[in-house]
Amino acid sequence: EFFPKLSLTALFGTARPEVSALTGGSATIWAVAGMLSGPLFNAGRTLGTYRASVAQWEQARLQYEQAVLTALREVSDALTALGKLSEAETGQDRAVKALEEAVGHATDRYRYGLASYFEVLEAQQQLYPAQQTLAQIRRNRLLAYVQLYKALGGGWSLTDAEWTDQGEARAR
Image 1 (spheres, helix red, strand yellow):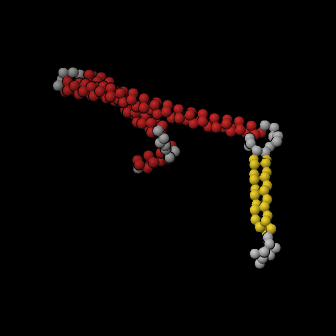
Image 2 (image 1 turned 30 degrees about the vertical axis):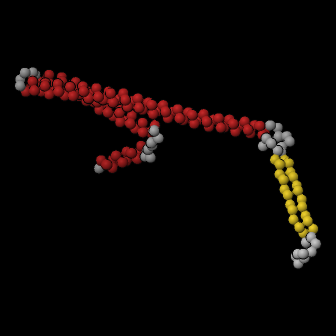
């Protein structure tokens, strides 16, 4: 709307008084018309509309950039968490295996009368929290996989109540 609109119309033809007078006299008709239109004064409305459009475009661009940055951050966070949790799981798994071996040795020593049952209980007291920690690390690692899946664009179609209903139905 910054520039005026120019329209041109042209007409050319012949006119005859009767249809049967195809060979006779006829008159040639032609016309050319032009039109120029545009706003003379609109109190800055055109410039204001242009500036509003530019501002809307800039807002949409910034929202898109923010969405991309958020998505990249979420993917990076999920991948970092997966790496750290995998390392923690490996270390905790080694610790649990060593404690299981210690419980086995303590049990063998008790069976052969070389130690009291108190030694077995102490070894078990160290094993069970380590196993619980390992289970929590594995749970957190699986949740990190879920976060990564969601960050990469995956989604859920079930609500929490629907998940609960499905879990109860499977338990039956």
